[in-house]
Structure formats: C-alpha cells, structure tokens
Image (cartoon, rainbow over all chains, first blue to last red; front, side):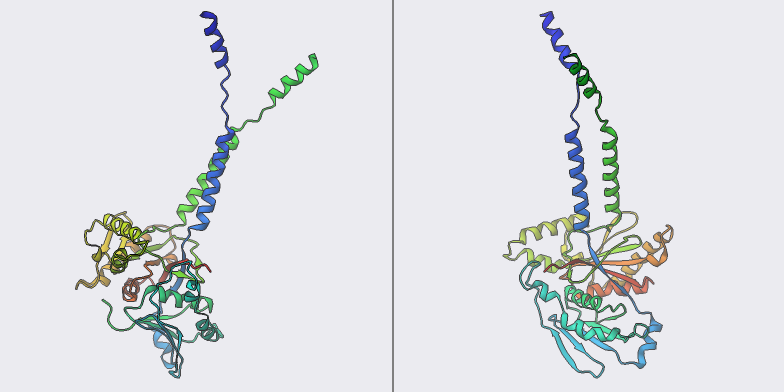
Length: 164
Length: 194
C-alpha cells in the first residue's frame, strides 16, 4: 500500500501544461476580431449645410434641381426647367442580394448629368435636392451616392411641403 | 551509448519560453478590441440601414452626435406581413420598446443616447415641437463635446435613419442641426454589393 502511494506522487511531480492550444486559441480570437472590424463597419455620406449667406449669393444663378417624388421617382430639372425622369418609382420590394437590387440603387444616368456640374471646383453650380415629405430615406441616399460619384459636395436640401 | 544520453539531456534543456509570446498575443488582441470600439458610433440595431453604391469610410467617430431615425409604422406593417423575415422584425420592435421603455412603438420616431448615457426618444407629429427638442439635444451634446479636447471642426450630426423612414423625419433632424449651428451632417449607410 505504502509503495503504491509513493509511485503515484512521483508521477505527479512533473506537471507541465500544454500551452500551444492556448496560443492557437489566442490567434483565432485575434483573426476573428480583425475580420469582424473590417466587415461590420458602417459607411457614411458627408454633407455640409449651406449657410444663409451662401444661399443668397447664388440667387443670381438659377439652380439645377433634383426632385424625388412621393412615389420615389427621381426627376432631373436643368436650368431651363426641362424635366427628365432619371429613375422610376419604386416600392423597395427588393432586398439586398436580390437580382436588380444594386441596379436600383445605382443611378448611373444621374451621375452622367451631374458630372459636368463639377467642371470648375472654385465656382460650383448651385444644386438643390428637393424630396417629397413621404419619399423614403433610401431614395435620398441613392441620390447622395450619385452626388458622391460625381464628386459634388455642396447641395441644398429641401423638403417639399410641411414637415410633421 | 553514454554519449547519446548526454545529447538527450541537452535537448531537454533547449525549450522555448512561450509566456512572452502569449503576452504579446494578448496585447495585440486588446489593441484590436480597443481600436474596434473607438471607431464605432453607438449603433441601434433596430434601424434598417439604407444601402449605397459609393459610400465613404467613417474614419473617425469622434465628435459625432448620433441621432437614430426610426420608421415604426413600417416596422409594424412588415412584422404583420407574411414575409419570412417578419418574426425578426417583431423581435426588433420588442427590443426597441424595451430600450426606450415605451409601450407604444408608434411613438418612437427618434432615438438618442445622451453623453450621460441615458436613452431618450422623441415623437413627431403630435403637436409638440420635435425640431426644437432635437435642437436642444444637439445643443446639450455640443456643450458636452466642447468640454473635451475634440476639435470643434469635428462636431457632426450623424443621422442613422431607417431606409424606410419618411424624408420629412430626416429633414427635421437636418433642420435641428442647422438651428443648433452644427452644419456638418453625416448620413450612415451600408455598402450595397452587386
């Protein structure tokens, strides 16, 4: 009995922990956080509100208009007042990943119209974005995306009618 | 035979000390965690973010005054539909009511978190001047930011509006920001993928 106990204690004398699995674990965590931080980041659009004095100075120049109607159609109106529909009405039934969703978001035709406005960065042409109170925020973001693509940073925003 | 024994003993001796490497790993890990949290603004998961084809990166969340704009009517409508995603939407509605401690979802139009950490919601269209309330909130936050070392040029109103929210709701926030003299507006969005 005594001999048996002695043997057991000799076995326990050398308790080495295997840390390689812990290191594996650490690296996995590290990689997880790296990936997670690069994937879940929100993006943004910057917009500077025009000051009241800025609005007054551009009054001698008739502005270009982008209008978003109540049924979310996008209409372009140039200085002469001619109107062209850039994107049709939508009820946002498509979901991210559905075929045609990206095309609905991408207003390439509007970008084409906006690009010449940025010819002279020192003298930007006045641009007004007017949306109906019931137009959806997503449609305004589509237009903002087109503005970013055309490298236009200054735009006046309006809400047609009374906001609640 | 004796020589072999000596060699074996030497091999036993040449073991690496792993503890410093583990220290290093943990430091890296902590660095990335801190980095990740510093770059994010407080996100309310009840907002369905709009998607955009060409958004830019939000490099620095410092100085951002976050205002969530909800579309409660649309959320309710969607939750009652036959859509397979409807149960998820109901969960979001419950979470939203729990967060803002309000039993009537249709009253939660704007959600904010003050610098003191308390959550508040505002209702629009009830005769109360919601633009004034938003303006007061932005002014308070601006004052709190002025006490920090953040450059006043970085003060921005970060609008996290639901894709389904009416433009008039978002426009109220823009008006309030203008009244509170914070001219920079940032719209949150997610990148749309082809």
